[in-house]
Length: 335
Image 1 (cartoon, helix red, strand yellow):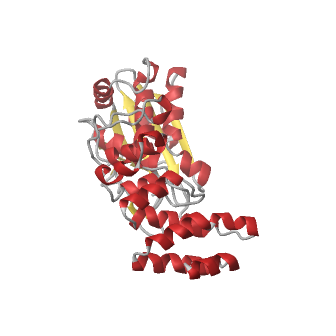
Image 2 (cartoon, helix red, strand yellow):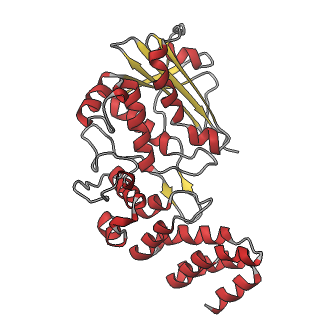
Image 3 (cartoon, one colour):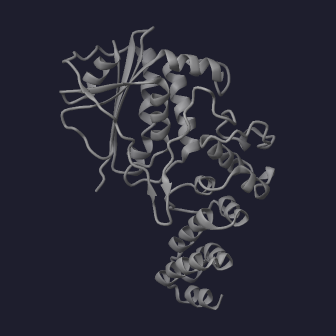
């Protein structure tokens, strides 16, 4: 620990970051944990070393044995990490590896790790997340329902996250479609929920999100927000739902990921609003009822004559029973 003591005393941020790499390369997890836990306190001596602490916590969650990875999650101390440490640890370690090191009284963080594993397809039915309602801030079933796709998860590396917009597939030119008239106030809550899926893009990156709700079908909703010459591809309901979950988890080009567990929650929340089940008693809505309602909607992926590249997601949803449709255009700047 002599090198660590010296680097902390000197306030040598570059040296600490090099020491993080050396510790990971050598499996020196005690030194890595020392960087994580001691660098932040250097502010008392006038040194701003929290970037080294954040990076060390990320590397512990990503590479260290389960006990130390879980300890990093429980500290939950990162300021500008590239992804939630609960997701980083859950991206490589099963619940059985992490659970012994996440006490029931650790509250919401234990629950979020569990939900990250569920989003990746692990069935945790019956797992004890604690007795207080605040112990599980998401409240979703601890297994994927039959109608839910496994989360589209990123590649999390030592220095960043690779999470590009999912490929759009083959979009076909659409005949000229008149934009539908605005829908009534009953569609407004769902429109806001659809826009909120992209809130990490708009609030923490350089992105923007536009949503509309119209009386009519999906193509009419797209026409209300697109810049002419639309291209469309109709989606299966699970693909549409999966894109909502991906967007809810995404950081956009420059933000901080919210995580697959949060993305799944946002998709459930938005689906409940789109189907009118957000007025049901309690949370979450009945899984089977929500799944049936999601299957009754029609879904589209779209773009327009600008042929947006990179960070663009065009999504449209139609409720054919009520004659209402919504469209979302989410953009972010990659540079």
